[in-house]
Length: 252
Image (cartoon, rainbow, N blue to C red; front, side):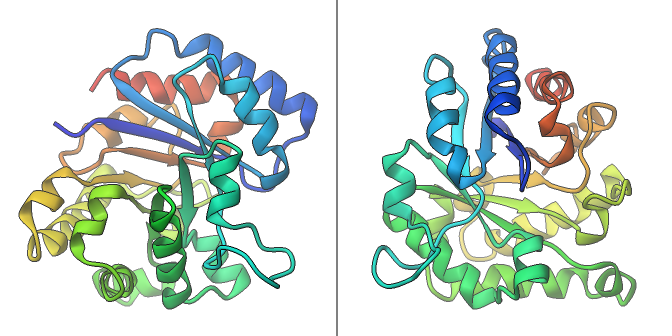
């Protein structure tokens, strides 16, 4: 059995006061959630504060992006060694917003994945198609291309130390959600593609769903055979909603 992972992605949100309130409430509510793994991915500048607030809990800390470089003249970048030093365990790579808004290419994401793993961070590799691509029947081709870019640099065994998140771009922040069956179909495709290279890796790797997961749909999504949790956006900014999603994971 793969353990459910619920990871909150706060994106460009929060300040010291709101984060302190949010994390304090999350920590207070997770003590009985022993069957689910939980992480929160904070903006860079609030990682030390969030790490301090999480120190008495089992909730892991993650970052939302990472440089492919470890150090050097790369103004504005934040490296994997820096993230490790402030207490990160996870880092999101290839989020659809990085791809669509900031022009990140598959090869860029792949290099970030390598940089994160090299330093011992667990990359959460995001894969997903746009609405135009889905309507054109290109979902599997897009997801395969994004996954294969990583596997071209790393062996499939690298996924033993990683998490995958399927995030249909058309279902992020739109209020739309892929049906559990639609999401399961893509998750199964991803797992089958990995299994073609290594069945043991495929059986082990956690594949999260990342398209507008809410407390109202989490249980149904997490009940699908190949959905191993969620990468949570807006709902992760509300402690009670986030905890309800975590409870849904606990109950699987």
